[in-house]
Length: 233
Image (cartoon, rainbow, N blue to C red; front, side, top):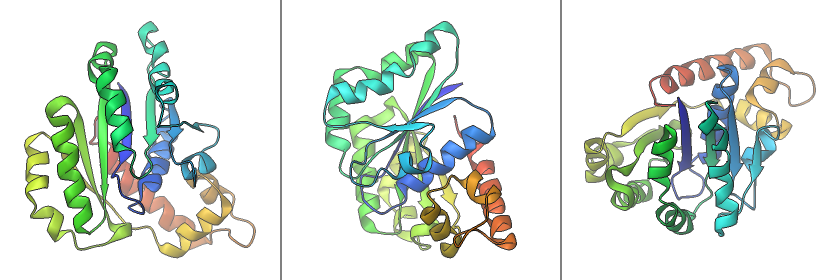
């Protein structure tokens, strides 16, 4: 299976780049080929941590976004390739225009590529409203993965009781939880500019992870991978 994964949420600070990074590590550890794209011009977090796999693109013009489609050219010849697109905040408008003008969903369907829109949610009301907008925009044309990111809150009662989530589920959305990785460990990994694999295996220096920290990261990845195994990736 090949998949195109838009990692969004439209709101800053909900953990989109963390999800992009852990999905990249999942593909690497499962030995599944993929290409990554980073649309955040200010932080480029995805590119920073997975520079061998991800590159920046400009979401404001079709030439930049067309690189996403170009990544699937080889699929025509039988090769399987997945793509991760780490969406910056407030990129929905230009992305939606490009998707509709390019007839992207039909093109991907012809190539046998599954399209997944990931909605990364924190515990706030904005995430609920933005999910509602996402579903209204694309309806039944794509898959949805709603991620309750416990690294950005633990009380998701607003989301769980919302009409937006009920509507998403009616359209077949998968609702999953991303557990919280200990904040100290995540800060150390971020300061190293390291992939999760590198952080676990190269643990020297001031920001190196200790023995039990490495085990906690391994456990977090294992649980996250078990969740990803249930998704159309």
